[in-house]
Image (cartoon, rainbow, N blue to C red; front, side, top):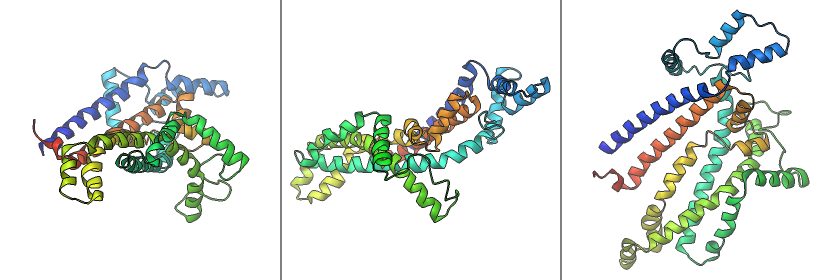
Length: 329
């Protein structure tokens, strides 16, 4: 219980720090969203009065009063789920804009990340168990794909599989001409079809690293005394591999998986941009390109919270998998 209480206290402090940094950083950037929107309105020939500016400052969270007062207002609005108004999609709320893009990224990057982890760890355990086999010799090829930039691999797949062979669609998250978003079989089938190629890009680029790390840890674990003892007792090789070797060898991979899982929400910006996928990565790129400070602040907050939540869950699971972490020092 003490272990879990310490973890909870740590993440409460980390959450406060993330929220505070998220409040400070946009205010250190040059310019402000009010001036940017007024500039666009002026360029379009729309009249801008002092009353208009005051109203925009209220909508976009413009700074009134001291920094402490702004910070308090920010916390109060945050507790009420108010992240402000998006500049790019004005007057839409930031929570609405993020809520529309978030399911796409979780479905694409989340599933692809889990698949990469399971595939890499599973193959890495087998490669470490059977050193010198064809699977073990395949590792340099898989790690080569990890060194290939995401955008280059994505462009190659787009060229061959959407242009030359035309197996997959070129861009988008679903067929906008034949389906409407909703929990229907037609829409889900279209979304899966459009997401296969971006997901394949993520899996191909990342599973080699999981495989190499698990293979090396498996080799090191097999030389431990408790493995030799288990084999000397006549336990089945499958039980030794799964219960004694793989379970302990995968602990460092679990920690790395926590970080990867936390960054699922941020999406793969380059991959989503190449495929025109309507996720968080593409939304973040749009927000930065258009100086949408409110939307950027909301996205950074969601990403920070997702990383903290993922690490908290994995810390709890780590304590269950490895009881030594709960031991008092």
